[in-house]
Length: 217
Image 1 (cartoon, rainbow, N blue to C red):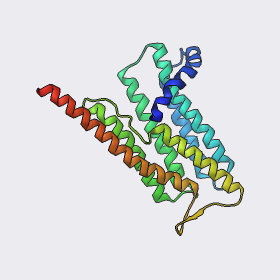
Image 2 (cartoon, rainbow, N blue to C red):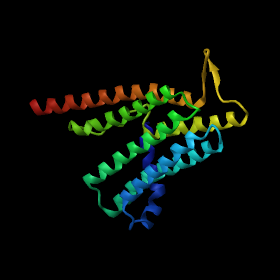
Image 3 (cartoon, rainbow, N blue to C red):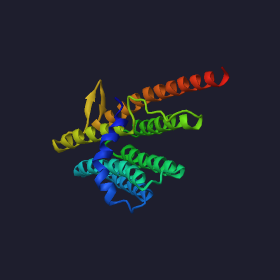
Image 4 (tube, helix red, strand yellow):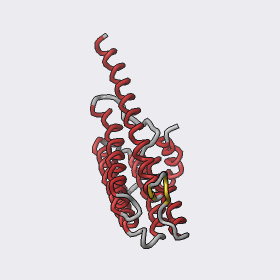
């Protein structure tokens, strides 16, 4: 099961909170998530000097994920699902991704080239998913790695990196190459992201084929 669908039970958990916040514009929640991601960026930039910032970045990422889910739940409760809402729901999230990956890429804990490749892959993964809407088919959510899985992967390896830094170790030797655990997370995101792009394109082409066969037959 794609981790995207984990949002469904989490929405039920957040429902009581959403009902209490029904007077709040969900767009404000979306923009607040971007602000949280910007703070997370600085946590990663300075994490090599202050390892506790890795723990803070994990907590901020959980907060961002919660806000990204909460805005949709509030919108549903308010009954104001609009086309504009789809833009506000998607675009700020891409800015959030950019902030987090830039923070990681410029951090001493990450090889900048590896970080940039991971950032590019993450953006292409999201773009490929949304591309289906542009050509008249469904938004694609195929895995193996979507936004939630990416963030979970980053959090897990950030936690491992924290413990290694606390023990006085920054990087590990892997086949003669020194890599931090943050590096490894970025490599996994890049590799799994390319597989995800392929799966989403395949899903789109399959839907397009069905749509065209119905149209011309």
